[in-house]
Amino acid sequence: MTFSLFILGSSSALPTSNRFPTAHVLNIQERFFLIDCGEGAQMQMRRMHFKLGRLNHIFISHLHGDHVFGLFGLLSSLGLMGREQDLHLYGPSQLESVILQHIKMFDIHLPYKVIFYPLECGKSNVIFEDKVVTVRHFPLSHRIPTCGYLFREKERIRNFKPGVIEKYRIPIIKRKGIQLGDDFVTENGETVSNEQLTLPGPLPRSYAFCSDTQYDRSIIPFVKGVDLLYHEATFSNADVNRACETKHSTARQAALIAREASVKKLVIGHFSARYKDLNLLLEEAREIFPATFLAEDGERFDVPLVRAKETERLRG
Picture 1 (cartoon, one colour):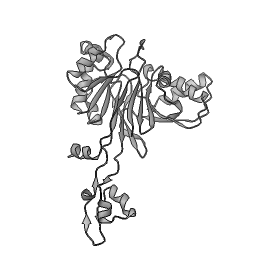
Picture 2 (cartoon, one colour):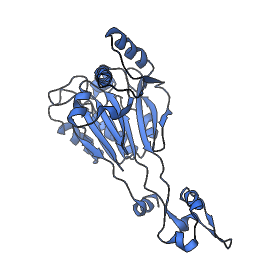
Picture 3 (cartoon, rainbow, N blue to C red):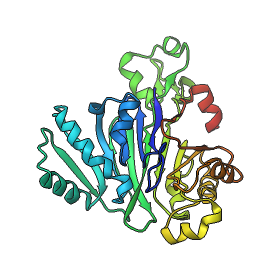
Picture 4 (tube, rainbow, N blue to C red):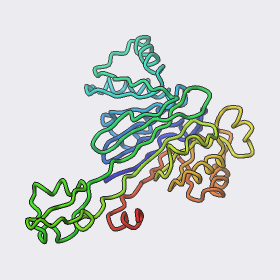
């Protein structure tokens, strides 16, 4: 069951010859979510062999161009490809008017419906949910209203221990309830606890997206313990004053957030074009949080499924 993050772009406001602006695709069990859509996002998706038609949900963090300029072309391309399925677009409340104005100005005719979900960036709510995943937005601290996003799998049903169905003669009609946590009463009136019958399902996996933001400890409760945290690291700590002025973060500050939030893995990105060698930023972050990795264009980060026996050990 796939849980994979694909980096389409890792640069900040100024693209470079080998880095596009911010855009990610997250694949959760073959559900594809586009998170931010910087310039060149659709080109990167083609290069990485994504089928654009499989995108049904797009999440925009804020209305700075390096996070949204690619969206206009993508919407047009989807129309030219004959898309008919609704497209769900989440972002700051001004996003809808920006998109509609663009469509009108350039005489774009979309054969599909764009459904807008305006978000109050100063609040946190669940904004999408299906049987597999929930998506929550939360506030980030930047120069304009900005949302972070938390993607989390739902708890899976428990698994029967080997042989218990036959041993206790558990009828089919009772099995789903037991997998959801019920105890079982045998034909003789004996109550068998759920712990005797089942093993926990795999741990739900999670990904948090934090770009753009200054160093802000108030995001820690939202990203606590996630499997994979993306946190912007526009500057090195030598340029911390510039980070403060622009309300961005340094690599060191991103690592401090990751460490205090007890995340499992940190991915840093949104790099300023001034840095030719990104190892400077990587080393700076790893001094604080060793499990740090660079968000490089074309990179993929997989979150493995932790099976039942390992789940018991981790939860125990």
